[in-house]
Image 1 (cartoon, helix red, strand yellow):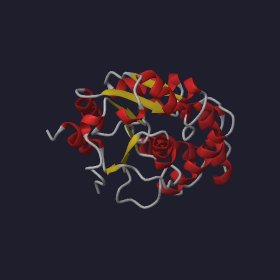
Image 2: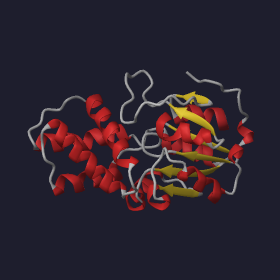
Image 3: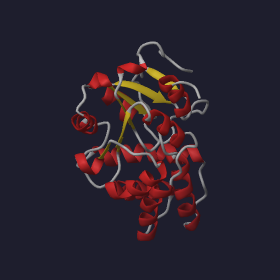
Length: 240
């Protein structure tokens, strides 16, 4: 369902900021593809995609809530937590492979074309809970010039803390009402971005599927809900 499409004018904005993993990149498929062989190697039956993703969401949020650590360390802690809950002990190869998998998590099929269309009208930026080094291969897969990339490593914190958004405002040198933020996670993105005055689009990548998946549930209300980025590009730039 597209919601509140008349509450803003596409011409109100000069820049569009995006969450990356979950919004531009299919991180749920990436996570499942990375974790299946780990459990298989330890003779642990696969509990099902959604149960694993929901465990990941809970463990990741807890790992990111404390003092800042690199995201590769967060992923290692999450994997160790999964091991405790599912009955295996991950080794160094498991931990390193899990972090390295980030670079091959697939972009959604509509991502690149939508970014190109949106880039014809708006400045584009990414705000992501990621390390700079892990983002490099993802940036290559996106294949679109970005006006700013704000990572957790740069601001030394993780969303939903507001530092990403404050830094994006600073780098883009725009007031909040001239930036549209686009994200899949109500918890990580929509809640803190709206609190700072940004208009927010929720890309409901799990539309039609039960449960919150790999992100904690959130109660924030977006200004607009779309099922994918193609729909958003149609709204902002025009169908075609």
